[in-house]
Amino acid sequence: MLKKAFLLASLLSVATIGSAQTTFLQLRTENYHTLDRLETMSGRLSDELCLQSKGESRRSAIKFLINTPTTYFDSVWEYQRVNKRGGYKPNELGRRLSDIDNYNIEQMISESGEWTPSENGAKPSKHPILKSLYATQYNLGYIKTENFFMVVNPVFNGTVTRQNNTPAFDPIAKAAVPENLFYSSRGVEVRGWIAKKVGFYTMFTDNQERLPYHVQYNANKYYEAVPGADYFKKPTSTFGTYDYLQASGYVNFDAVKNHLNVTLGHGKHFIGDGISSLFLTDNSSNMPYLKLRARIWKLNYDVLYLELTPQYVKAKDRSIGHKYSTMHYLTANVTPWLNLGLFEAQVFNRPNRFEFSYMNPIILTTAISRYNGAGDKSLIGLSGKAVIAHHVQLYGQFVLNEFRIGELVSSRKWYGNKWGVLLGAKYFNAFEIDNLDLQGEMEAVRPYTYSAQDTIANYTNYNQPLADPLGSGFVKATGVIKYQPLRKLFLMARATVYMRGNDTGSMNLGNDIFKPYTSVPPQYQYGVQMINGPKSMCRMLNVSASYQVRPNVFVDLGGVYRKYANEAGAYPHSNTAGVFYNEAVTSYIYFGVRINAQRRDYDFF
Image (cartoon, rainbow, N blue to C red; front, side, top):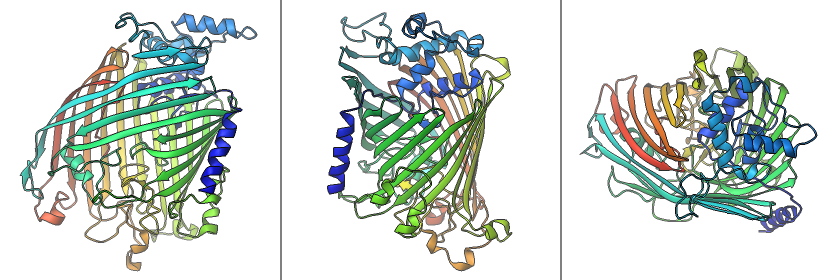
């Protein structure tokens, strides 16, 4: 309690001297694709942005966009008048912007209009409701005074799905697999600032969903977890409805104006430039956190202090313990076109308290884990990003958990050589077609990489991996096509192929990161392949179209095809049911309407 009180007092005292704040762009929105696209097309990396560490602040995003030539002249000329010394200095990007790019920039500036120089960049709505509702484009409720700003918006996602499965009968539940599914989410989000010193954000949703067959199987495998969610009400039947609440929010302030930002909140994060990440993804549940972000010169440095939930078997309501993590991520634009990064993470278990030595905000302190004992989970990683010829972006990550040089260079394939690699490329305006963007990504993660010596300190949160949802022991390739042929129409096709090992019975072959690696018998510690154990092969295709009816109101239509089989030609149920199938095929089509929400996709495993 003393440490918590000291920390809270320190934060409050710093807040009193803070002179600015910000809020952050929501994860998984098209805003990140827009920023990524514009930065690459400029031919140089922006010192205003760090898109490798999400969420990105609205303040930095608008500062970047307002320096980009655009048809939204009000903000641009307004910026010229404010910045009288140097004026507006357009970069080379302006010659390559399409009308759709200009429209996307205009909309992003309007959505976060409080960060334009006049603080009034939100465009008026053409059709307000009762004169006061939706008076500005993106905001149901909008309040702006000299010392207070707040917007209030509804959050809604309603999706109906029709699925077809082979097999159509589940041997465990001894019931037919249902054809009709749904996802329903309703809530509210609020963001704003007080006296231009403290920013705040909160979102709350009530959710019900019936999962596609392959997702429902994974949600009940080993430990029960709804992807991306935390506590849920257990369905009364195998194919029943999952019911859960989602809540996120934060307060934010600058400890040093424009250079050191402090955020205390409950939510998700993503570290990486790709579709997935070997460092940290937003696929697990929300988590309490304290985040420090320093942005100086060409350097960006993030420190995350996280409270996580260790794995548990769902039973009656009870108090669940916690584990903790400290993560450091330092990136630098070492040249105008190349960014390099260094990542470090520790996951540790203490009886409901944070280890004070892990409060150290300085990177490369992994040696502390040796001081605390060998039971803590430590990861280090490297990242890179390069922009080439105004159209291409290359990126990658490498993560290392443990290795011995002698074993690494030998041919014995020791199980303790734990590493992963991710490589990807993006091609913007592909084949000189405006707003046609391609992306390809490959991952390979050795078995046992994210497991720990016990069942607590593994790289997980609320029964879900913190990194890629597949865990360890897999090779995956993903390709994405994005095309925006019209201002309000977004088309997407995503194909994924992965091969993964499977643990058999009680044998720990390194594919289940919830199992401690100390349970591996000596005779199985050598000869460990990248795909260890019986192989599974999965192929998925997701095609979708989204139309923006009005700002942040979308209509979605899409379809998914998934084909899964393992080496023995047996569906995973065969381990318990003794029923064998040549393959498992799931296909479904969906239709939905969403407001201030992201599409609920299930094509990640």
